[in-house]
Amino acid sequence: MKIATWNVNSLRVRLPQVLQWLQAHKPDLLALQETKLEDTRFPEADFQAAGYHALYSGQKTYNGVAILARQQGSDRVTDIPGLDDPQRRVLGATFGRLRLINLYVPNGEAVDSPKYAYKLDWLDKLTGFLSDELARHEQLVVVGDFNIAPDERDVYDPLVWEGRVLFSQPEREAFKGLEALGLCDTFRLFDQPDGSFSWWDYRMRGFARNLGLRIDHVLASRALCDACTGCRVDKEPRGWERPSDHAPVVAQFEV
DNA sequence: ATGGTGGATGCTCCA
Image: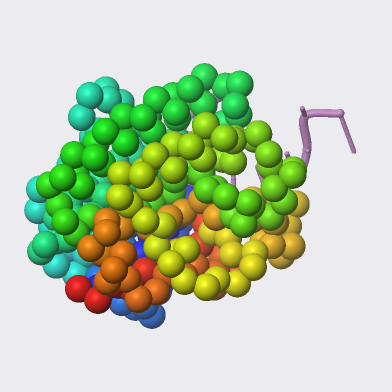
């Protein structure tokens, strides 16, 4: 089972790239974030033609999540229980025995912003939700744009980023709280090249200089961590013409 | 010098 996550920053713009990537890598599941499309505008027929079922929870202009899957999904969920949030950032579904939760965690803007408080509250509610999901599903995978770089290796310059949004201690503690539930960061189960990132700012030639952060993750329950045979960032699409600012992260499971 | 770049929207917000 190959599972991937990719913040596409507008599916309208990136649709040809997503279709090309699907053809090349043939994942069983691909989770997308920042589709920025209302559900009525979702290009379902294009994905059907490529051999994928689509689940989506979108909104105009901002946010929006989707799951492309080789098999049909069931038990779709689009909200964190107890969190009344019009922003479309959550999409979960069950595929066979495997439960997938796709997240677009709030960015937070800056540590002194109201959006940062919203982010921390969102992560707190998420933790409760995922605790329940873990109790229900032995095979749970939680993927997406977490907008958190978990440790020093995940930022190009830890000193520059210390205390800043995406790398602040409360955010990293929230990430550790997810790990404490029994979710592992599959990327760190394997040796990785230094300077492995999943997002590079469009500005200041960030990608060309590898000034990036690793904020897109594939977390898995214990049973699936034991069955994980690899996890890597596919930097290639970030180098394409008119790219998303994020690269796909791909994990392989022997299930 | 609070920049710089990209996406969607529509005289600006979000990342």
